[in-house]
Image 1 (tube, helix red, strand yellow):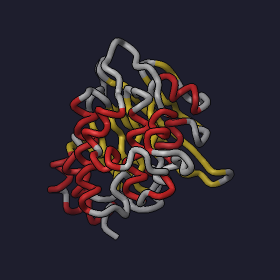
Image 2 (cartoon, rainbow, N blue to C red):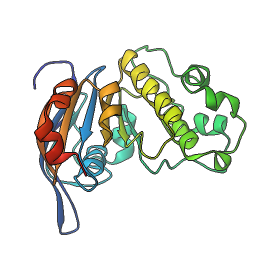
Image 3 (cartoon, rainbow, N blue to C red):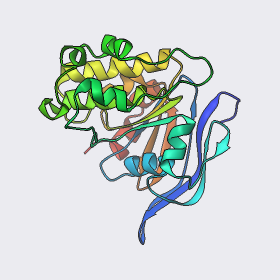
Image 4 (cartoon, rainbow, N blue to C red):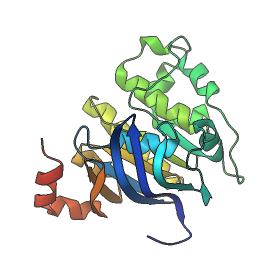
Length: 239
């Protein structure tokens, strides 16, 4: 893929945990204002790909390019400061702080004169959070905590966001709000790369999809095209 609108790119990305090689030359690209789904079964390498892009798992080969800069092997905080947000599956919110206080922790000024994300704007996406803005995060459900994690990430005014399994284990009404949030980010020009197993969720929000298996990309295409690729789905997505 080529073009000046690419905001994030992985080229031949390799990563390992100790002696165990997990990623074997992953190539992917993400355009500004685009939603891309990275799909695959458990253990296929989706989470490791996101962590390697974010610098949380050291790359053993290849490159990560963000906003035209080679950020391979940068510390995660430096990549975050450049404008890449990361929402882990395990949430990692501050449970002793209220919703409003958690949002304050994530606040950073936007670059390029863009309108900043504020609690009020985020509450319009996540009305549940507005109703519990003074509640401690420890008293929230898992789905509510996931919404808070995304909202806190947006308070950093990122140019692109990595979302790890945003629909995993959530009630259908919360999944709908997650989909709305992803589409709102897209409308705001934020690029989103999400790892996902749920094809219905991916189809609702994403423009393109990469299918990964055993640390390598096996399929790339538009999301609606994957829905017609029965052999690909059965080979790499069905349990």
